[in-house]
Amino acid sequence: MLEQLAALDPAELDPADLADEALLDLIPAIHVGGTKLTALLTRAVAAADRRQVHRADGMVTMKSWLTGHCRMAGGEATSLVRAGRRLQELPELAAAYADGLVSTAHVQVITAAVTPARVATAAGAGIDLAVTDQVLTAAARALGPEDTSKAVRRWVAGIDPDGVLDDAAGLPRVFRLAPSSGGRVYLSGHVDPVGAEMVHTALEAVMNGHRPAGDRRSHAERQGDALVELCRQALVAGTLPEVRGERPQIRVTIDLLALCAERGAAGVGGGELPFAGALSAETARRLACDAGVVRIIIGPDGLPQDVGRARRTATAAIRRAVIARDTHCVFAGCRAPAAWCDVHHVVHWAHGGPTSCENGALVCERHHTAVHEGCFSIARDPGTAVWHTYRPDGSEILIRGPSP
View 1 (spheres, rainbow, N blue to C red):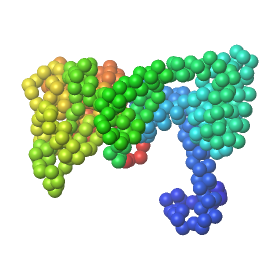
View 2 (view 1 turned 135 degrees about the vertical axis):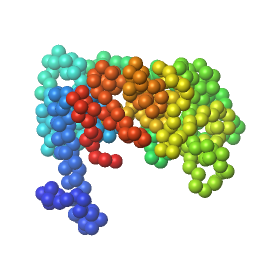
View 3 (view 1 turned 60 degrees about the vertical axis):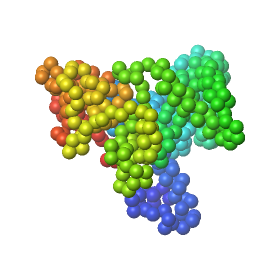
View 4 (view 1 turned 180 degrees about the vertical axis):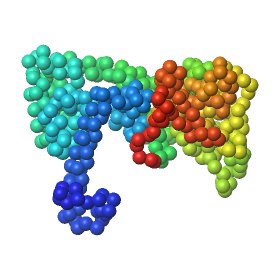
């Protein structure tokens, strides 16, 4: 089946046309083929990482290059770079991966656990890394990823019993919000036990202190509402740190006609949240019921017009207009959010460049430094929101991934 699959053009193959037995043969064949390609991708990333070729495109790490040019999620890019580095010291696992005998999930479980510190600890205990490679590879070939994870934890406990406790006590606190195309925002992450106890205690206070009679929400629903309520209270209280000179606040961008339209009016668009994305006009109206309103005038070309008088530092109004146009760092391959970005003068004010929306560009701190001190440059197509990034030699950095 693998030979037949190799001779096929995937775009011309319709699995629905296959007989049941052929379809069942095809699925594992595709899985093995995909695993081999991912193994090759891992080796390619490892080679690029060793040679630091990403620096030619102004990226400090291979992970940032992958997220920008291949549109990978940050976690996926991190796992890929880590696997590429650590597989170089695990040749048996690397060979099994290249042959499609272990899956990407197996490799991620093992490479996440076999850290340089644990390898050194094992060596100090007289455990050769080659033996570890053989044992864990054999487990991966015989077991599923979940059972392989258990075998890996037993290995960790055997060579680093104190490290198992350290993993729990010193665990980095990670929290992610990921907007989805369905209008929901997914939350994930992990915290150490003490941090978890703090979060749990705060949520329990809101959940039980404000629970109405006859509440039929599930425990998970009550926790979700409590988390949002804690954040709402912090925003209303005004106790949070200022961000770039402004008090943190929820911002909604919506056309004035849409905001003023009757509910259910045909042909009326909705609003836009900077992070979470689109929301209905009615939701925007609800948020605007008790909110300040800031006007940004849009020109006939659909771009925000300049506001305020000339200043060296962008006013809050200019920054809002630049964010409305650029949404994130405009450096090629970078999608750092607006909250991390400065408003860069494309033509420096010292050279006569005005402090204006037209002459402003949203760039993160890293790439602001690259432009000013690294001799990279950016330019916008006149009358559009399309930006270009150029290396010091004048060549343009082009996104190498497939067009969306």
